[in-house]
Amino acid sequence: MSLELAERPAARHAAVIQATLNYLGPVEGRPFTYAYPPPDGQPRSNIMAAPHRVAIRDLRLIAGQVSLGREGYALACGASALRDLADEVAIRAIYYLESARIPQAPPVTDRPPLSGRGGIPSGPPLQPLPS
Image 1 (cartoon, rainbow, N blue to C red):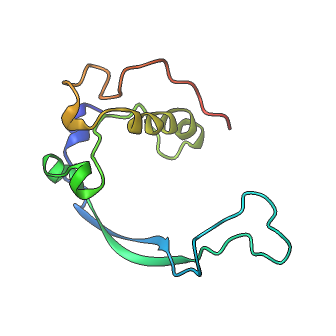
Image 2 (image 1 turned 60 degrees about the horizontal axis):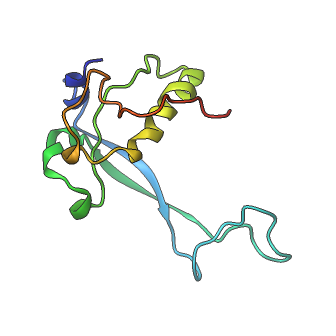
């Protein structure tokens, strides 16, 4: 996939889809989940999911208009080497590694022009995540 295709929405995909996302529901006190067996008589977690139907928009249409400081998120662009979205082994070996590198990269607006590596930040060679 070329970087150009990764940056603009494909004509066959909707710019908005509806999906159910789980948000943190009401809790007593601070939310918690024990990563080990909880104390006697205590629940493992007090977190309850609160599903909400939301519109998920293709933000590539407004990529230049959002900022981490104002909206609380930033857009990162780049092509993936993943070719088969149904291949769980490839997802773990390729996509997870690419995704883990995104937060390490500077925001798109602070980044120099992308190299021929398809937008993947340069750095040490990526290693597979443990299974």
